[in-house]
Image (tube, rainbow, N blue to C red; front, side):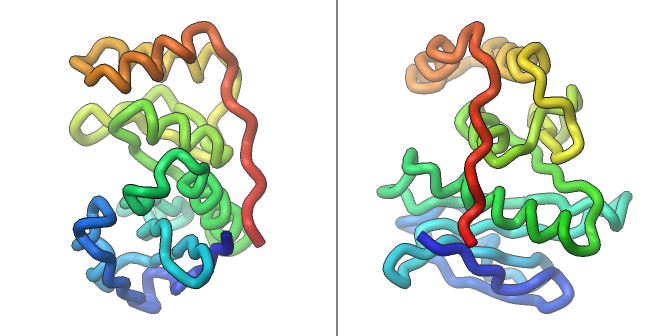
Length: 175
């Protein structure tokens, strides 16, 4: 798998994804956000859209992340997020954050090196950021927030499996 930066927000990159294979496909056609993709044998298997935070130009906000439905669970999302985070922090940004709305996305953010800030935003989304503490108590506090919700069976099983655990290891970014 390889990752590629299609462009930063000022570049206005667009990306057409098959809506039957990718969640949020329509969000990637818009030119207001930067885009990066993960490819396997030349085929796009994951994508992320991002732009500067509206209140802090030095913070890059990861807006939409999608992995092809048949490739979920392979670690594509965390590696793609790590790729974008490293490039952002090596460039003009001091901080990277994302609001996640489910425990699977929360775990992916942690695997990408982001951590729960203690904040909520939007529709019960938890904010994870590059400058937040990755200690076990904070990680578990975020998981507990999801346990307060009406969850599907897979989410309940996922959270049950992680009870009492420390944060997952951070993945290496693809080059």
